[in-house]
Amino acid sequence: MKNTVLVVYLVVGFVICGWFTAAAALGWKAPNFGIAKAITSGGSGSSRGGYYGGRSYGGSWGGGK
Image (tube, rainbow, N blue to C red; front, side, top):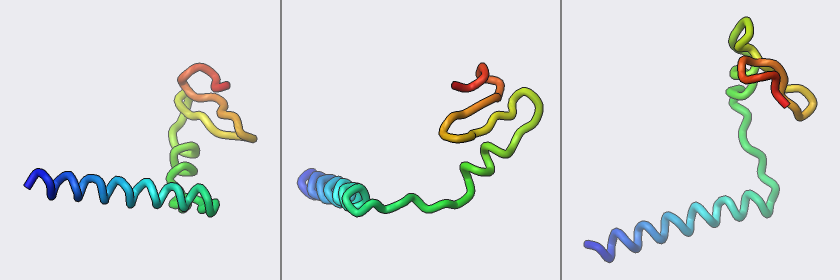
């Protein structure tokens, strides 16, 4: 039983590492589900922040830098 769990753990780990290695080597892009846009466009008042030109701004966490 312990050997089976170890083998499954190692195989899953190698598959995941291989997947990310292939993604990095082939330049795969993450899918855009619109989540980041929904987060940055949501909210109101002083808690609202944003993202512009590679830098964040606003929000209630102190001005963004």
